[in-house]
Image 1: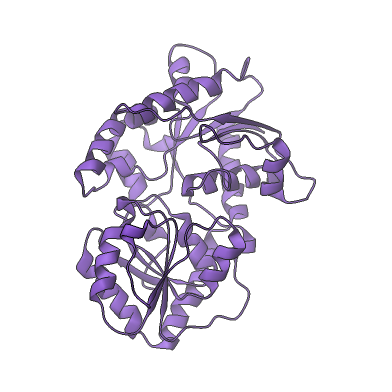
Image 2: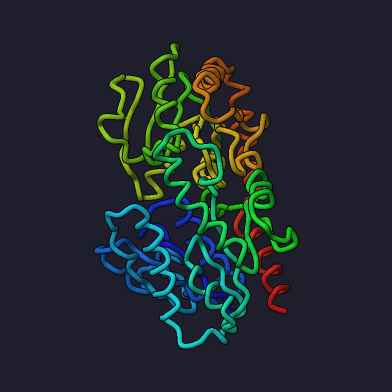
Length: 383
């Protein structure tokens, strides 16, 4: 099966959950026997990785390779309001113009706005393969806290709605994401397919689990308001007791707390460095205002961490009282209580939660299983 995979970048060349998901999708669809043509991008001004660089990142030194790779620059950031949308449309058009025709492809799988121009041309009567779109979190339709977040969401809502309603198929993480799609867009529920995110086998921890005393928390992510960094900082400054907290991500100095209980590691792109910190931790904290299905939660679960997360997006499919705790978003009091509960939790109970995270990951969220199901769906569509 020939698949054209369009995405706004793949890790490690572009950092982000969507980019990590895209890299895994390209890799594991290929391992399932698909011929994957990948079109991805890097930021304007960044060097373009060579095909060999991409294949080595995905497959190591094996003989496995993607069918074809096209790397582009995402348009230069503008200064006008809405520049991201105009750049996204222009980028989609640039992707489209890389091909003379699309007859070799059985399916076009597009992340975000990358198929915008394709969908437009198909509506005008051009013969194109089936197009499925994947918008990861639909954050613009979820609860938002600040005026700046609401303004960005207002600008994104219209184009996101148009792309979803005019694509042939929509891919969802499930949970509240599917509910949102069916409630918000005029789409046939039979054209909405649920596929969770996944994790590579190599992420699964095989070493014996231990718990720390005092309990050790970790946050992995960007210092953007939507990730709940403001509420987390306030909570950490209020709670008492013995604990250690580690931040992995580019947290600006003005958002850092001066405390001997808190350590800032900065942004880490090397997987081994991230795994080392996860393996030394007990609880992953993910207090986002809105999400899709965060890769960081899957990675934490695979390494045997209990999870304290907000009940947004499809997080409910990953976390429950068996392996952690779900709390309402935008509620500092519940976040404080969640942290305190873990600080006071007996070691044997914490170890049970940590072990359950690994079991849930093995049983439900390995990429091989997910892409096997996805390939079957795509083949049915193509037929």
